[in-house]
Image (cartoon, rainbow, N blue to C red; front, side, top):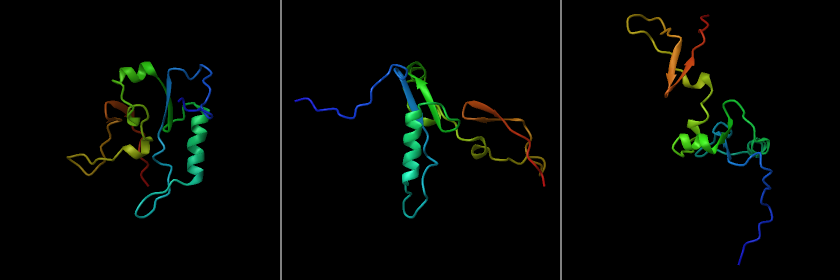
Length: 120
């Protein structure tokens, strides 16, 4: 017996052979002993799914060819990097108390520019 599929989305062809990768790791309310996904967070995730477009640091539409080139992994961090300010840790130089000033930091295997820090 075949199950009835009442709510199956219709494919219009433009999404064919594409995967929507969504990083919703920052969409929650912190709680104890667990975190909570609020209705507005769920609505945001659903909205991102319906738009099916790239959103910097949050959503990427990825082709099957790109996934194949990544050895078929669907690990979010392969496709979406965290926002710049969250993944850079300022390091002190070994010979002085001055901050390390190299303009490029490596995050995984990818390079990012470091904007000069404001000293107040």
